[in-house]
Amino acid sequence: MLSTRAKYRLGQVVRHRIHPFRGVVFDVDPQFANTEEWYEAIPEDSRPAKEQPFYHLLAENDQTYYVAYVSEQNLVPDYSGEPIGHPDVSDMFGPFDDGVYALQYQMN
Image (cartoon, rainbow, N blue to C red; front, side, top):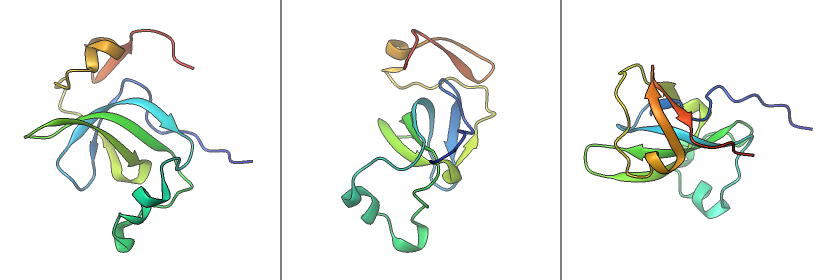
């Protein structure tokens, strides 16, 4: 049985360790749960291990908003204190306070 503890929590704002985007965590998979096609599209020399938490983010960069799926090893906390501008944030979360969004409703 896999025993993995997620480092980041729902509602927390994080940023990618390498790529210039940030986002708010809205779901966590205890290990990789996307398609093999998606995984194989990542260059082999930068492909993350599957046996770690993967995070679903409402993400943003300088050009657009989108949903990202990112391994824990590629995330770091965002200490900017700035909220996320993604248009779906208000559908899932309440107020933004100290780098974290309050959950709008209880998730399973």
